[in-house]
Length: 322
Image (cartoon, rainbow, N blue to C red; front, side, top):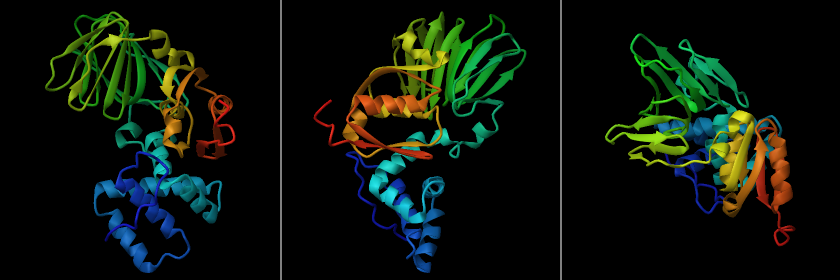
């Protein structure tokens, strides 16, 4: 069965067809006029492929989340009014913060932090790990090696000396080998970024020559790539350990996504130009309301806040003033 036509979004860069189609199915089936044939067609569409099933489950979860604050008619208006693409973008980009998209490996991890939680671990060898919000990992130590497997999130490692047992972190198919004592490591899906705060580390991914990253440098890798080391702003890169996030001219969409890691729910933009607006500032990770207040005061935006959902849209009355 074919999916119903995708609802036109308000984004300049529309989302993949599966996410658009899944949201359209959910809105249609809750319209009050859906037929038995349409419900059967959706059930068949949902299980046709794993990708369609994942998109359908995500759209259903978003509908249920909005249901905590809105009647069905209001929910349909919110989803349509924000644009299907905009809403599903918020769901997929920031929905990990809500917890319902967790991978099974994350749920069964040896150690994990909740949304907005930071925690420190002292490992059996005396090494210390600081875990950022929404982080999960496994620890595997034996007589020959010390290994951390990072499923998601961000850590800072202060590695205790033990020349007979290498200390390494596996993440997204790559490996970070500690050649010294201090580094940050962040994983977002298949993308990994390392910032070295003391001594050096070695990054290795299959099919690429390993690279060494020294203190004060950053590097990263992803599918088919291994980036060369580059200078890092350690004050900004490590601010999360002090309960802050520091941004210098970063696009508002990226800033919102970063802040979204520290609070439950979704942040949705109805205008692509807004997401590209540069932002500079220092924001506390434990007070997302302060972040929204700051952007509402500094930028020509209007916020609509609901439980689990914040919609960011242009404010035409202020567009020419700021």
